[in-house]
Length: 146
Image (cartoon, rainbow, N blue to C red; front, side):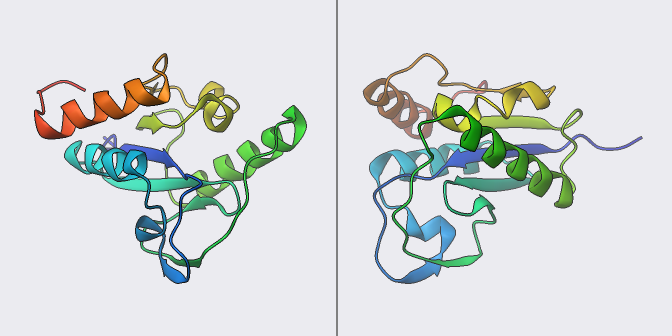
C-alpha cells in the first residue's frame, strides 16, 4: 500500500529581497513568513512555492530576485497551471492521492484545484488581513486541526 503524502503549496509574493538566495528566503513579506511557519507546522512531506516566474519552486533552490506577477487574463494562467501540474507530477506528487494544502490566492489555485482530488484551502474565503490574523493565530497558538 502506498503512503499518502502531505504537500503544501505556498504562493510567491511581491515583496522579495534583492540578490540570489534559496527560494524560501527570497520572499520576505509578513504573509509569506507566516504561511511558511504554518506550512512547517503541518509536518508535510514536501513544501513547494508557486512562483509566477518559475512555476513550481523547491524552497531550497537558489533563485535570483525577479519582478513578475501572474497575468490577469485566463489563458496564460491556465498554461501556467498546466506547467505547475506537470512539475508536481515530475517530483512524484500524486495529484489524486496526496493531501495537498494550498496557501494561495484564487488566481494561483483556480486552475490547479480541479486537478487535485484531495486539496484543502484553509484560507479560501479570507481577505489578506484575515489571512494574516488566521496564520498568526495558527502559528502562535496551534491547534490539532488545520
